[in-house]
Length: 388
Image (tube, rainbow, N blue to C red; front, side, top):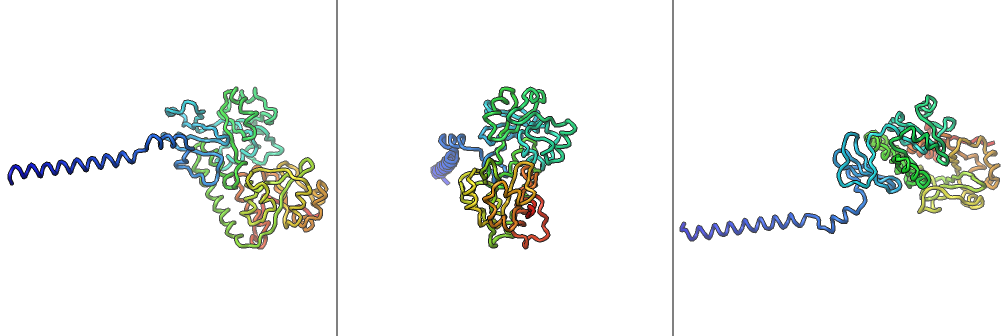
């Protein structure tokens, strides 16, 4: 081969390699995010990377390097959970840091004791509010209060802040409705607080997933996952068992200050009745909201008069002993179908402290709605009020 021909081949090879390199570089550049896309990503909400949250909508978590967790609580506040002994990552200067696992907490709602029950961390409770032994229904908490291991620091409307300060809690868990009156005071005392908003969820499994939220502070996500998986399986089984059945009509309401308080259509309780196979009379009432609302006695009667079953979900320790005693509080309900047929069911006193057992509560409701389908099932969280 002559020299001229060799030069032509070599030139072609070099040109070809240059083109390949150019194309490769162009491809790599096109896959990099543009400045605009980076900005959008930084402004977006947490991505739930590696999180198992499926139903809850009021909190979020992102797992960072070195087991650090970036959490959004029930008031949309960002918190950085950093393992004890580890340094805070750079770039999070304005975010409250809480070192995990926590081992000295203040719980500001008696319901929160049930959120930590599956985690078996009762020994971390240093103080509580709104919880007294006469109304408490979790033995582990009652026993620790009797022994003095847990200190009662008053009701949320009149807390003993000096006593709270002396207990030196690492973190205080408060409910969303108490942020305005408690948040600033805890800031003043330099006690980190976390907002728990499970009651605002619209799905019972969403409310139960706040067990997962609490587990983040204890590094006990595995325990929470196991409990929630079992609950989801139970609820799915119940849902399948009542599927296609003729739905009994169910009503629910408590009498307060001369009016009825009912769970609105967008509440997690409304969803519980639906999963259990009931046709809830207030399913279309404020279906875009969660929680409860007050209505007149006349409106309650009009909506509930043909209901097959009445479910009374009282929050206090007092429960009706007989139907006649219950009717005396609102005589207008005397001729309702459920009352005349003796189908008044009351929640047990521990019902409000059983958020970790909402799957069991749904199964109980299904057994009340369909006794023939659930023969042998022992209703645990409700009892039938005597027809006297």
